[in-house]
Length: 261
Ligand code: ZN
Image (tube, rainbow, N blue to C red; front, side, top):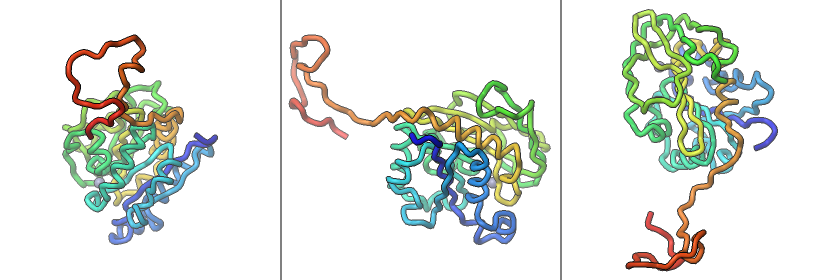
């Protein structure tokens, strides 16, 4: 890992170009605003990538040089190529952090990492959200008091169909009465994963100072220590076993042969 944590902010960049409401809030794309919020911490070196670039801007080289991938998608989950998804998963298992934002609960990489439907309930009524800190000692909650609020949001409510998180950092209460596990962490392979709920594109949520603070905290937390766990599945011959070993019974595989995939 280099001195600075390398963050790549990926945005699908669709509604910003097609919907005048979203374009007015995010004239240079949501990925740009998210990246600017994270880059306020000079220890974080931030770049962006979008769906429209060749290989969605996520070549093997870009991912190899990424410590944390931040993902915002909504209208075009299905347009993300499976070869790029596989590349992302391999990097997460190696140790790259992955931060899924808002509607990225239904993104291909997040759903694959979770292994469940990742469904929610939702409502678009511009209501108030209060995000309660569940673990004041957690690095992602640093600098946040007991809670923070966002005046206008889209509601996401329980049940959130994900595996039980390793840690719940935030729980949201909404003006309409629902609640939601808004900030959750998991580990997959050697990679740290964080889901952060706020971020509906018709509200200026990524200009909110508390949201930006949480994004910076999360990027530092998810970066891990830079040590890679390279995936392999080697056959260890009997003569290379730590203890002296006699081969007994039948064998399916020849010496030195690769296993089935
Ligand atoms: Zn939304």
